Amino acid sequence: MMDRRVLLIACMLLLPLAYSAVSAQGGGATSPARPVNQAQKDTTASRDSVSAKGLDLDKLLVADEEGDLLIEDKPVAPAKAVASDSAAAVQSSTMAEGEGESVKSADSVGRASARPSTPGRRGPPPSKRADSDTADVGPAIVEEGRTINFAQNLKEYKSPRVAMLLSLLVPGLGQAYSRSYIKASAFGAAEVAAIGVAVYLNSVAKSKKRDAYDFADKHFDVKRVMSYDSTLRDEFFVRNPDIDIKRDSIPLPYDRYFYDAAKDKSPNYYESIRGKNFTPGWDGYDLSLDEVLRVGREMLVVDTNITITGAGGNKYELYDNRNSSMFYYVKRIWPASDGEWLLGYSSYQAEYNAMMDKSNSYRDAVNYMFYVILLNHIASSIDAGFTARAYNARLLGEENSAWNRLSVEQRFVFTGSELSPGVALRLRF
Image (cartoon, rainbow, N blue to C red; front, top):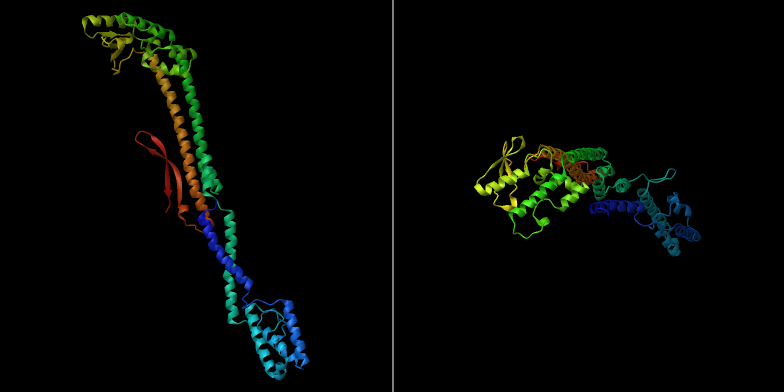
């Protein structure tokens, strides 16, 4: 739908066109012209009537040698009066001659003011009135030219809504629609670059994850986890002989869902073995579950904490054994305190977690690039609307319009910890 402002401008420009068209059709005449056939009939009747009374037609028509009797009604009116009243024309022939000459002279002046004289015809020079009429025709021609230009501009009008939609789908397409090819190239290049970087980071993330999965397949054994799980369940019934609960219902982190995921080698399986509850399944696990359970039973007797030393010199503190739900948890106190209860330590698990973190960082970068791409679409769409309006303003000769100084650019902002993409509105003064 045409913009209301464009429609208003069209109406304003069409008013001078209508005025100039009416002026051109009027030709500067004071009254409409009589049809040729009727004028000729009146002239013939007048000539026959006067000839019958003996009037000198040569004297009556001496001022009408231009042969132009077809322009106005004024000079014809006296002739019709003479034709209708022949008796009066005979008695005052001399007066009729004088009046005819004066009327025809006025007719000649009127014709001269209405249009320029044709070569080969006699007549008085153009008067000041003729000059003013000619001067009035000038603006009409200019207005008509502006109307033609506006019609051409209307054909080249660019819809801001269409431009915004195009750039929202493909950044830079709306700018190309508005014939701003430099901006279109900039937004298009940013889109291609962002997609290229996202594809590259995604391939690296997948490669890092495959390497981590291969490392886990080599250094993690589900059978060790199953053995650890079975031992803990037996210990649970030893500590709670009177409890009536099914073996599979004991609240442990190892359930059939984990074993099914391990069998299928699903992503959930590879994500689960990163946790502290699955450290016993990794190579290099530094604690013996039997040793942990022995120390736990001893703590029930002496009622004091006992330090456990694992492989590699790691030292642990056992959890309070009086709480039967977490009697197998320990806390590393040397060489560093982890600050949480766990089942031990494995350097292989730590290396695997580092590999997974690296892969996930590339995955996060891919998500970040998708955010950049989305923001580029939004920025390009907003800028396309400004660009289309600036183009339309230039069509109307408004070179200094505010739309020509507005643009939208994508910028990166430092948030304190990282760079984040954003959109900036730029106004040039």
